[in-house]
Image 1 (cartoon, helix red, strand yellow):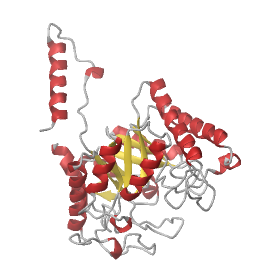
Image 2 (cartoon, rainbow, N blue to C red):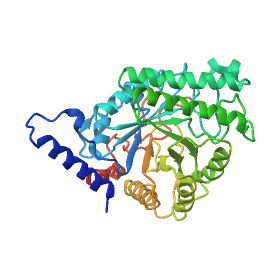
Image 3 (cartoon, rainbow, N blue to C red):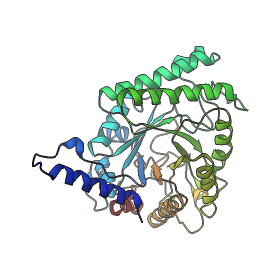
Image 4 (cartoon, rainbow, N blue to C red):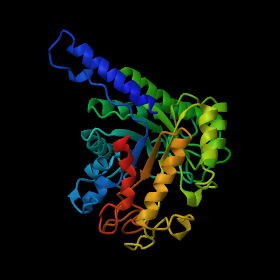
Length: 381
């Protein structure tokens, strides 16, 4: 039984009755209650603006060319994730103006938005947490660096608020397994005095803008792979990082100690231990092992798991199985990472084309794969 839906229906009926009883005036827009989202079916579409500028067009399952955001919306996606780099002088994308465009496209279709602060001028992940070049002089001054992080986070969200583009969820960092805001080779172990100060400054900025704008913005902390979430959140909470709403995880079987058969164990532990909401914010699975271009694909045959071949049906089955596991342990979302990073003539930092063209939710003709049907369940929930 879906208790959230029961509550929603009760509230909706109450509003209708109260508006109609002795009052025939039209119902005001602000009185409309949005139905609760019981599970987030997400897509990270950070690459889409660039892909379209590179000439990519997208087709739905019926082979009809459409705006990719509409394709995802019609399939049932209800959350769009977008990354933000600080000052990426090497690209015209994933900067503030590009992110504004992405958020606007999502909001135009009434989809929720998760904004992913990388706090870097380039990719931040378990191997890289490169401090923005503009902040390098403060790298050894934790207090000053914390102020920079707070101001940047607050001012970015304030600018989005002015444009009526505030996100619904904010990630304070991306795959922050290591200490954030480092320079070059990563330092281990984590200096938790420094790390907690910086992360808490980012968190405080989100809480403050949320209060100032009277807008509920939830906070997520994102770690790559569930096994790393176990030790990271234990250490983080012991060092005073507690004011967040979501545990976000990347889960790629190729890089994880956990299979689909035992993935529920760490997810259950994280939910029960920290009493936070949980979402898998990155995953993907190949629909083929054929490479569409000269850019080597990241998810090769080593990414395959037993029972899930590199086919469109295998891709869909993987997503549905992962979704079921997340739901069964009380998790509340699954986001596919870069499902629209198709092959084009444009280049990345590493080659021409896409390193993900065999793991998108579009085939090599840019028609939606069967994997796109993963989103359909949200239409009937």
